[in-house]
Length: 415
Image (cartoon, rainbow, N blue to C red; front, side, top):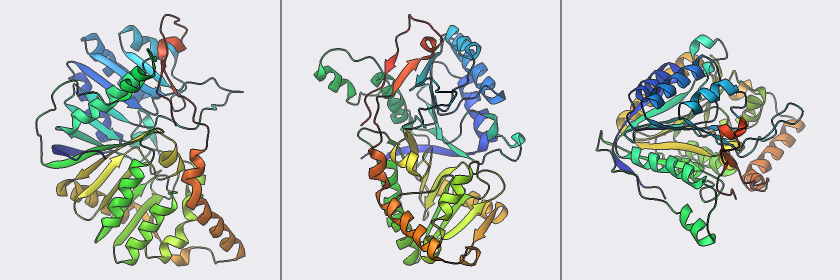
């Protein structure tokens, strides 16, 4: 169990318009260290702005470590990476793999986290990648998404976690005992920041070793304890049977349960998959809203008047059973109220509520499809766990560019 940490201040950041200026501003003010993890880094105007911010920090003597995913960020040019590494930035690539006939093959068990820690004093966690499609001026395909800025003692826990990921990536040395001890949590590098607010919060992560279902478990606990409202806004919604059962039970006991899902998805299969669940959810009293203004990429939720979460984890098989994810769980009335007001406005202005009358008439095919979906949802967490559990590699980007003097780093074995 992760501990609740008191004394934090958390600020909701909506879309790239809020997120990018704050992150770049904090990197520009960094004095000692910047650690950044992201699934996607594109070499567009946002990626180039991030590069300039990191170069500025590195040239001031700040230690900069960034980790990108080998599947999510496959097309950075040698010039982009070399500019960073020449300035002293350590660029790590999670599980890089060569393409097969031009296609990326390393789809499963991705590093999907989005975290930034600056000087151990401020952190960012959420679902926003470093790409221009998180800005409204990108056009109709720009994404609706969220992150949270954190000050206070929780930052020390987040810093410890991201440092641990880099430490675990060191090449194995010594016997099995030394390798086992190296995997044990290490003490924080420095004292925790002082209290900055009144919010309780915790960092909850998912991996393929010890924490295979932590994020889903916290969702289920919150849903089970809800007394009057649940709002979930999630881009890729196809959760396991246990979470769906908790949502249906909450609605039947009188809780106002509302889901905000994609109406204009970036991938059509997303809407098709979620819509297979509509009849069952609506029949139990769950209200479904489709966000139709642009693709929804958010992963936020709240229950009642205190509990909220913001993070990288979708409620689908990839996030709940395979990918490496990170969410912040928050107990704070002010944050819950602010997030709730935003989501209420989103539903009023940009969503279409789905009613039972909007669904196609039930037929033999619909019944057979529902039967199949029901049993898939009951079993898919276990089935996805059977997929190959390779040992992901965390490789310094210099090596990918042909620098034989840089040793690659093996991340700890996934199970």
